[in-house]
Length: 399
Ligand code: C5P
View 1 (cartoon, protein in one colour):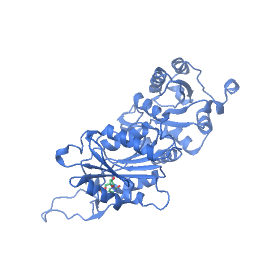
View 2: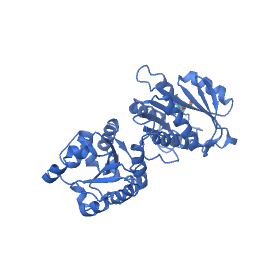
View 3: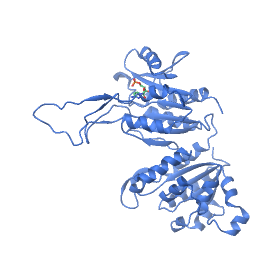
View 4: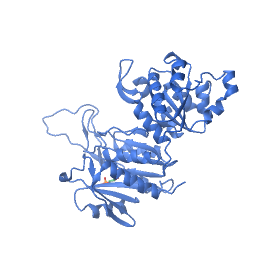
C-alpha cells in the first residue's frame, strides 16, 4: 500500500523526534518516499543532516528560505504529497493547527495542504491531559485530521501516563490506513466498543465482562477498508487499534455524549456493552460498612445510545447497526430488538457461559436485517469483523 506514495513528514520539536528517524527508514523500506520538514525546535533534537541522509531528500527548514521558495514554494510542497504526517506533534504544533496559525514553514504547509493530515502527538502527560490540548484535539478531529496515539508509558520527563508517541509500527499502520483506497474511503464510521463503568463511589463501579475485542476488530476492519473511524470506547481489556480516532469514556452517559459529538457519520455501529443503569446516589466518598446493613443504591436508566441515534429525525447515519448479546432465544430476541431500537441491522450472538464468546477470541453471529436473518458460521472475531465491514461497505453507497 505504501509503495510509490509520497509522504510529507513534519517533525516537531520533542524528544520523540528521534523515533521519526526510524519512521523515515521504515517508510522508505516499504517503498514510500519521505520529504522531511523540520521545525526550528526539532533541530534541537535531530539534525538536518541525519534526517536528510535517512530520507535521501532535501530537508525543508525555514519559511523564508528564498532558495527553497525558488525551487519549491510552501504551497507546492504541501500539495506534492499523498499524505502529511506530523510526528511528533507537539502541544504547540497542535495548538497552531487547531487555531489556523501559519507563522513558520511547518504550520504554513499544514494550512495550505489539500491532503489528509495524520498527527502522532507526543508530550508530557499533563500537557496531553490539559483541557487546552484536548480542546485542540477535538477541533482537529472535527476538521478531519487523523491521529494515532499517544500511548501510556514512561516519559522522558520521569512521569508515567498518556503522552508517549506511538511506536513506529503503529504509526506506519495508521499511515497505511490513511492512504488506503478501499471502498469506505472518504466515509466516516462511528464505532462504540467495550464495557461501561458506572461508579458506585470513587473506588467501586458496576461493569460487565465485555473485553472490547469485537468492537476493536471491527474498527480495524473498517479502517482497512478506508473509513475514517471514530472509536468510542469504554475501559476495554484490548488496546484500541492504530489509525482510528480513539475517544475514551467511562460511563454510558459519557459514551452518549461522545457519540453525539462524533456525528455526523455515514454509518454507526454500536458494539459496546453499555450498562442499562447507573447509580443515582453514587457516593462522593468511599462508602463505609455500617451496622445498618447494605447501602441502598438507587438506579436510573442510562440513555439508550443505539435507539437515540437510530431514531434521529435529522442527521441520522445512513446505516445504524446494533449488537445483541443474548443467552437464549437469540434470533427471536434480536429480531424484536431490531424493531424496538429502530436500527437497520442487529448482529446477534449467544453469550451464554458455555459458548466462550464473551471475552473469547471467536464469535458466531446472526445478522438480522429487514430482509431476514443470516446465520454466519463460528469464526474468529477478526473474520467476523472483516465480513461485517465488507457488508457495511456494500450498504454504504460509494461516493
Ligand atoms: O438493549 P440491549 O443492551 O440488549 O441492546 C444492545 C445494543 O444496544 C448494543 O448495540 C448496544 O451497544 C446498544 N446500547 C446502547 N445504549 C444503551 C444500551 C445498549 O447503545 N444504553
